[in-house]
Length: 523
Length: 95
Image 1 (cartoon, rainbow over the protein chains, first blue to last red):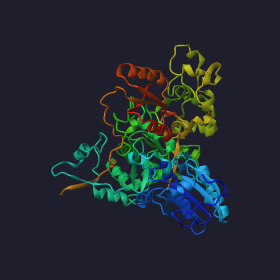
Image 2 (spheres, chains in turn blue, yellow):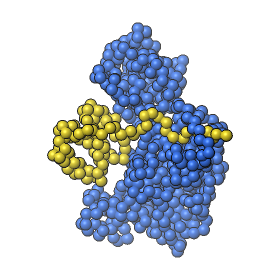
Image 3 (cartoon, rainbow over the protein chains, first blue to last red):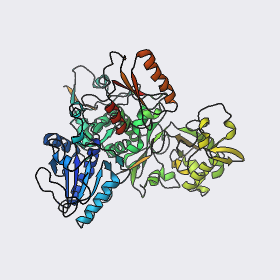
Image 4 (spheres, chains in turn orange, yellow):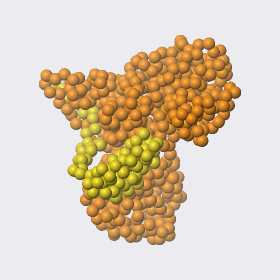
């Protein structure tokens, strides 16, 4: 890499602009694809004030294809001869260089790193005497860091010939979906089964007219890619989503929820890649908050987890069809869940905000104030809590603790999270006792544990890990604390007005090495 | 009138997740085991490695591991495997 202070050599015999941010890349490098998307945003911000230039190590025709799939508009230069790559001392791509007003390198970075991009962007703003754009956020669905690939000029001679096609993880424009003719005399519904379009329930055939009506309900272009669906990472264009939405029985106005929901579902933090292939019970649960619940008629009350409303059932089914038809996770092939989960048909609930003494679940993730949101949590099937006699919060919450203590596996501690869905009658008891949501969480955290006497040396699951556990005393009994921290427990309100019932939903693997809850605002 | 449908499936070619052709023989081959890091998996894979060598004439077993079974293998791990050029890679799951 050129050292800071060195004059940047020419590329292709042409002088370079300054100040400028240059990015060398190659077309088959996923980290380059990711970086270029953000650089294109910087190009639009700094246009006319500072230069952002991408330098391709490949020929113009191959680069053009990538630029179209990523929707890039920033200017390109070409170093197909790789002379500049060598002269600039590249080791890996993407390689970024910040040039000052005299054309000297004043900062650089290799690989994709949001912190580096923010630093370079901010410095460019300083050189151009203009405000930099808002920093790139951590947790926007893309990784914070991704190692780059070896620079093209350092590749072994044979590699270019043997290389597999690049994974297109970040393309923004996709191909038009093909049209399929149903043969004369064949029922379209049966044809969909034969073609492998469907889950085991009948689908509404995605005719061109029906898909067009679905597309008319969104301002997005049909070929715009909303996400790449794990585990096969197929591009989910708006048109593909619309076809699956038709099959699931969605109304056109449900696209307002389906598009952000698919974005959230494929957010790297949720790790649907792992959940789609696990033998565990987990399935992605979507929780809907805000005015959209009432606009589209989401069930938040009675039978909230079952077949109460078209919005819940058909959007939930559309999400599952997307995972199956685009993600490739068909049961028995990639989806190898031992017991499955009834939520694999549809797992969408609305929060009963009107019956809640607290703010909505989405507020925990920064989307409150009457805004709409969808929050995903990879959840086991619901475990019931029944308590009909409790008059106070403390007595009521005692009924939740043994259920929580059994999550994942009875004697495993600290590895799981919980979503506690409190029924309106229980919520009313808690509210009357003056319990805030935080009070509920802290009570459940402090009072949920597994008694030490359960660890009697039989070698069962969770017994080998006790050195990691935290000992505590609950009601005079020595226990291991079930949860790592209070934030491992989330609380919301849903369900019908009658019946002193609630449910607890256990998690899949959690944290940065597993699944984290993801909340996305709905416009 | 014929009904025309919009294809709702992944239409990429070749399809994702295609399995390569089986090796004709394991004799004198180099096999990579990608341990997905399930608890206790390495015990099973140690035994598998010895059986591949003793019973099937595998000349070398290369061992790799994902940091966590819950996530895809990092690109660096895949690059290491590609560089070693084994005859076959087994995504090695044991639980």
